[in-house]
Image 1 (cartoon, rainbow, N blue to C red):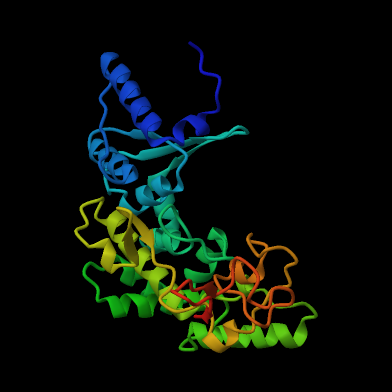
Image 2: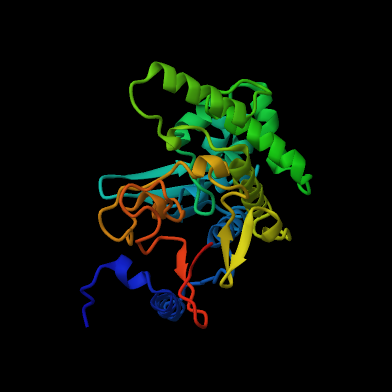
Length: 320
């Protein structure tokens, strides 16, 4: 029977995806192909298998994931054979020789994993306003940046050293100077934009706080160690920017509130409805409505902190 649904809809269901993998694997084996099933990161298994095969002959990897090309350039062996990366889009196809790429990149190939991870990959967030090419061109020129990046290749590096190196890199990406720090840079950029601009400063256009960036840096280091050691990393992700929620690893975004308590109290809404949707400014920021709100005054909506206490013989309203 011809399947007429979109592929991404079918594969969005994890059971459908696993059943399809099993069916495809079975058919390939029946036709004489060798298959390997990845228990963890499939990219590291693909790269390690390709490198092992390249000891005896040239290898071609067909794929679309940038992770594959990054890992191949980093792990490229000094052998007589090459590993080629073939990728195809709707407009064109291209083949990369990873041996040639590594020769052109030189020492910069040694920091490709951290450059890719810190600027955003499958398991790390993207830095707003910082593209891959921008990160590569800015970070591979100054010697102090290269030294900080190379620390992410070090096994068993102390967490404080990882965070210090990562924050210095992110600060430089956003235009900071050495030893300035993200928080001072954030304040400086906010002040400059407020003085010279005629529009309200959007928080997303500022560098991340040092607290949020620290967790991002830890996840970057963990992912780099996964790639460098080709999935034989024994580090605990819960110690490196991840938390367990409903048996799933979820990123820790920050350990601090979005703003100081006195500033959060300034936020108010002007809803004419019941404050029961994300259009309510207070609800959007995770706050209860207060007396400063224009219509509900924090007492007559579903987002109010006022509750009815139905104790015996009393209908008193309790403010929490």
